Image 1 (cartoon, rainbow, N blue to C red):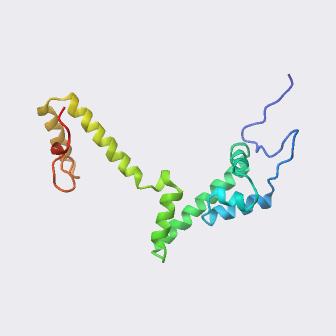
Image 2: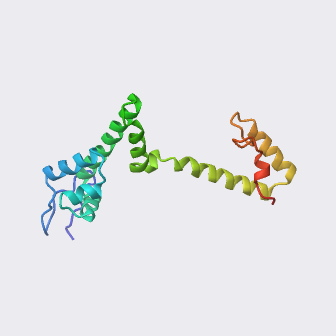
Image 3: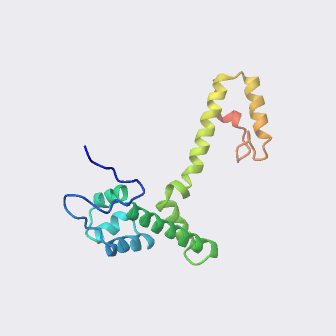
Length: 164
């Protein structure tokens, strides 16, 4: 076969056979402007008569489009951070939008997941160690300057953990 693969770095906007793409530079700009304004891609696509599945396909197959959308998302984050840093009116709303729109980077749930994992590790240690050794581990953790074995309310973690 004489089929050649396109280099990965080449944008995939040039298509072979089939229906021509509906993506134009103007449409891409409208989608990116909507994302920069804080709208979700689904909403922007619907407003521009584009099915979200098409947007998703363009994100996978069109490097230029994908980069433009990612830049628009980063610009939105920078704008929201500027509002928060300067203490402008709406800083709380900007933080809330960051937490909801960019959950992976800004969500408070990340901290609770870490605490849950810490508790799971302590339960596993409790089950695998003698009471004396487990107590020494908790005492060593308490020396980290952040309370370690002591909960925020002053109650010992030992009292909160189930017996092995």
